[in-house]
Image (tube, rainbow, N blue to C red; front, side):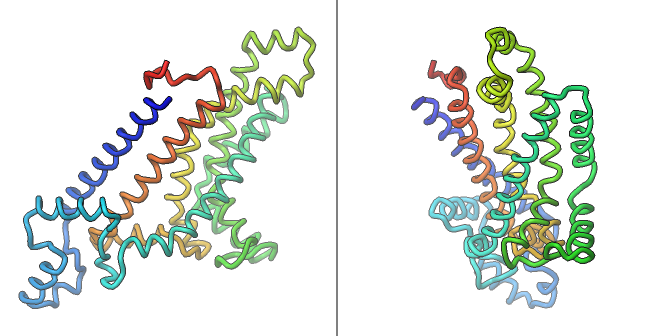
Length: 311
């Protein structure tokens, strides 16, 4: 296990280095000016001063080495959009809202998705199965930018049950979380149903039934535990996808998250912001994937990480 963890840590470092390097190179090849339209109003001397201030007048390889050194020290640079603010400060201020929204959406998706998938599998080809899978198809078919305004208008404005927007209290988290999680609910439900059906047809389940174990004991002690493994493998990417894909939902429900900074930085060629946010999201992804592998092994004791060389 220790050898496997160390190897995974090395892979994480290499992955982050590649992400930083490729992002840095791509940013340098973006068309346009990093200082936006206002740069056209600057004199040649003013432009030279700005480029010197941000180190853009140096050779690319020097800029790269300097940036890598800063990243290793936790410094992601100063935003070109907000010259007085560091990228780390912007992340520190805006990310908690995106993270909270993502966690709410993940909790809803896991709970509803697993329940729907389990019910569908236990009632295979029956009414509940059809209903659950129809819900899953609807969830995949309706994007968040359609579902979000519908929930905000009908549930928030017309019915007045929940706040249609803003980020003011626990009740204001419900609608954006549902809008964000709907597609993920569908994915998890379909995956859980397929996995459950496969497990229910295994010989050890048939043996458990022959021994006279109750339906609940078979489902909770044997079926769900094994059927949930494929779901666990996708939770890492799903979680990262939720917290990084909140832009549209954030705009609809006025959530002060990080998504808007990411898009604005691309439009304005804010090199440091784009690279900094990419590194930040990549770091979250590799950490979550690492934890997913560990949890995967803990759920099923039979897994000894053969590929990691620990068996």
